[in-house]
Amino acid sequence: YEHSFYVDLTPTINDVYIKRDAMGSRAWRTILVGGLRAGGRGLFAVDVSNPSEFTEPDNADKIVMWEFTSSDDADLGYTYSQPSIVMMPNGKWAAIVGNGYNNQGDGTAKLFILFLEEGLDGRWVKADGDYIELETGTGSGAGASNGLSTPRVVDTDGDSVADRVYAGDLKGNMWAFDVSASDPTEWGVAYSDG
Figure 1 (tube, one colour):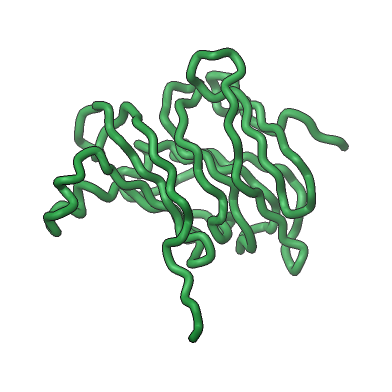
Figure 2 (cartoon, rainbow, N blue to C red):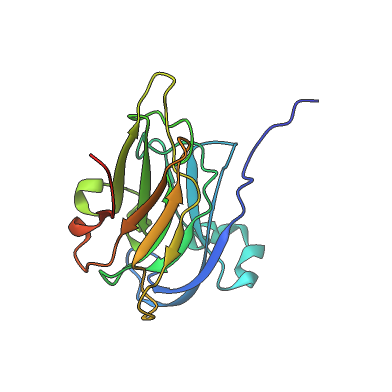
C-alpha cells in the first residue's frame, strides 16, 4: 500500500459579500477555500451557499469560483497552511494563507493575500492587484527553502476588518504583518532586524 495524498487540507468557510462570477452582482455568499496540502501546490474557492446545486453535474461552473496554484506563482509551495477568509482594509474580501513548504520560487517565506473576486476571470496577475505577496526575505533555494505556516489574522480595533497577521516559518521565526492601511502598497512585515 502506498498512500496518495490528494485534497486533504482542512477547508475554511465564511460568509462574504462578493460576486459569484465575473459578470454577476454582489450578494452574501458562503465561500469555502480549501487546498491540496501534501497532495500539491494549490488552493481553490467554492461557493457552497446553496447545497441543492451540488446534485446537478452541470452546476460545476456556478459552484467552483477559482483555483490558485504554483503555475500562477512559483512561490506557492505545498499548501499545508489553512486559509483565513477576511475583509481587508481596502474593502475587498480575501483569503490569507502562508506560501507553504518546498516552493519552487525563490525559497523564501511569504504571505499570500488572494482577493476572492479577482480570481473569477480565471487569471491571477500580481501586477494587476489580483493578489498580494508579502515578503519576509528569509530562506533561499537549493536546500535552504523556507515557508510560512498557517497565519492568524487579528482585528485590533473591533471593526471586523483585518489589521495584523501573525505566522511562523520553517526557520523558527515568528512574523507580524501590518495590513491596517487602506492602501495595499503599505502592507508588509511590521518588525524586522537588519
